[in-house]
Image 1: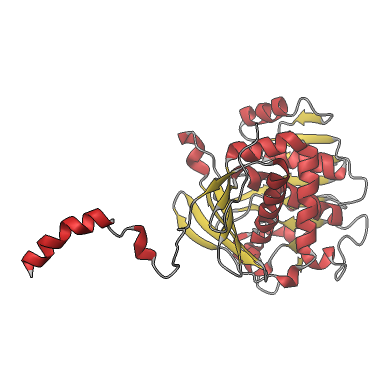
Image 2 (image 1 turned 60 degrees about the vertical axis):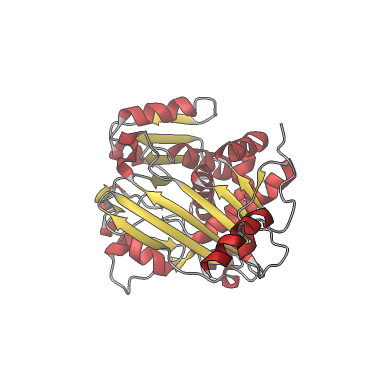
Length: 364
């Protein structure tokens, strides 16, 4: 059943709930959703210089981080509120929760308010696919997926649908997480192999994706596990003090990043000296810098998540929700007959003023 028309007046904001976004994905299908979302991301990265960019603003605590991720071009401003709290699963809560806003630069009016918890998982996976199409060996068929938590299914499906990956070797220190993933993806044509160790999962893989959640300087991959020609998709190292890769892995690879000032603070790159060379991915996507240059080259996408991907996701959600008639109108802003008279919203009505006047006169 379709919701009412989305935007009725200039001061009404389109709102998309988790249920709306789930319905959007269900209608289009996961393959089409990831494919179209990847197209939006690619289009926006190719106009990289149109955007006013900065590293996200983070508030850290012992158990996690809360972040704001802003970005804008000349027409549209976007931001995402997102957290990362690995211990949340013990409380029955997601590790990552998010919402986002898309606003009109000319007026400041928020055009869209949307959930971004589900959408972040989709855009992160789509971003991995965009990077891998530029950096992995052509005709890659096998992937190791280290970390089988909430993001894992999305990564698996993105590589299946966007790159043609046929076999995924799975490892997680929590065997129940691996079983959950295999159960969720049993309907696909993927060959899913549960492995007893990281080494077993990685051996012979074309692509290695690491997407672990613990806020720690972990060594999920060491240099002795890396083989010539591998593409490493490092997703889990995404805040200060949280890494997955031994520094020797970065030294062995050609390293590509989203936005270098942010990745040097948050990614596995935080372990390396300031002069360690990296390439921002937009340059590869615009054919201004080389990506993979040989079959034996080791490539590494040090993915931390960047606000431009949320901008793309919010654009995509806005467009498809309009196509499908999903969402509802939300009165976030006042509607005023006189835009200079904000007090009119709380001014007592005429009868209340009449009753008050004698008391005011008596007091005088």
